[in-house]
Image (cartoon, rainbow, N blue to C red; front, top):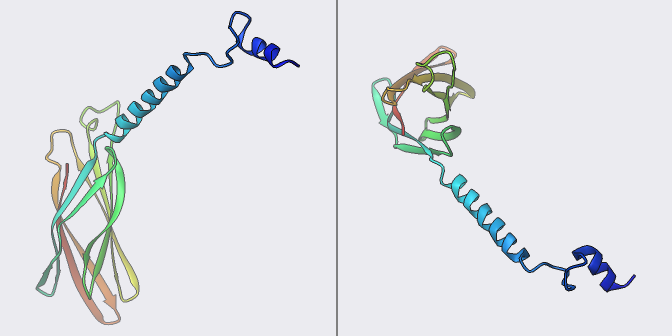
Length: 170
């Protein structure tokens, strides 16, 4: 088959013989611009910040302060695990999850934001876990103080370790 006939079939009988139309690069450029615009719009979505401050661990009237921690969640919802406190004796890991709630039947719950925390404090080879959930409604200040007591038993040795911190969603 002749190459000229093939091009005429591909391009059409009225085309002077160019196999690629001249306006094709402009279409490609437009699609690249649209793709870049979409990626920028997705990338500039607001991030949710979870601020954790005033972390303390108390055992037998001995208070140990911990560092302030900031967690960035992509978008309005998400979850992340972080270490809240770590020293020679204790290591407290927390998994924080922020979820919004949409209900058609209740205008009070429509703007609710849930903060669900799973706190882990391993000791004596045992896993100690606490799950705490706090609901912030539409007009509430999205900050709260939390205090969780961990009772650790090893035979007749019983220890009470109290974890306290302030959390704020921004």
